[in-house]
Image (cartoon, rainbow, N blue to C red):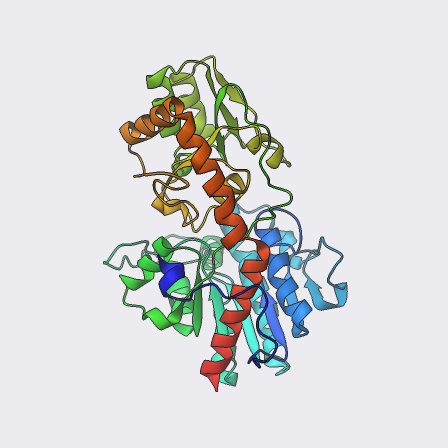
Length: 406
């Protein structure tokens, strides 16, 4: 596995006698808020590492919703001028906000006050160009995979439309995030942070050297997410947005086929329109649609297993959360590295309804296997994927980038 070969996890606390080569002043930028849920949590935990290490210079983000790190370290773009074009369709507005973030970060870098830059794919092309000019080492975090996935062939962006396109349309098209922007960022960055072995593979097939890839899986709060009392009913939980990319249609079809006794399926997540036809087609009365919740731990810890056959992720945070709650998982290699096949759960291929159904049936009929996998799942995250592990790995990434810059 990547984490065991590329850069193995370091101890939670580095030996005090070893002098680390860390930056003096870090600039961090992200298209998110600092503190909150999802990516906002990742941003906060990232900044904790540099703030506690005494080298956080500034973080550029779209808001600040935490109190541990003083606001003087956060350049908040909450009242940004891009709001004036918020009436545009989401891809244009989204692109404009990312480019504005990039512009602000590039201006910060141009001051010469920073000696390391950390940002995210799609957020930092202009900023990376400045780092190259000034000789500042740079790190880019990849939230999912290479823009081209695992494909060997490059698919170029469609040529710009000419002819009768209005000036307004040409202006709007310049706001969009084109593939070439992401690819150029990959090239300019000194180190790419990848979340899983699958994510790393999509860069390997594009010819990226192993030394440019650094394994940085996510973390989980093991005090917040922890096992509850096992239910008497076999309860499978799907947690995440109900969209086709996450395999909800395959879960529903497999569940419909089986008609398991003393069993129920909970769907915890926002129901998107694309999922509604599948809910109608494969509905059973033992399905409960919970919807979006802000306390997923209080649902996951009521489950027997977690089922998440996603087709495309970086490293799905819900797989960490479910494992921390002691749930065996039916998931995919594409969802990340938390689950090992036959140990913490069962790995299936995306879209393989037969395999999903077989895995459900097996776990339903073998409670002793569920119990063993439950213990293994909790142990897996406690020993490998806490936020302390994340921050230690992150400091190793910073040290790697700084040493190479010498």
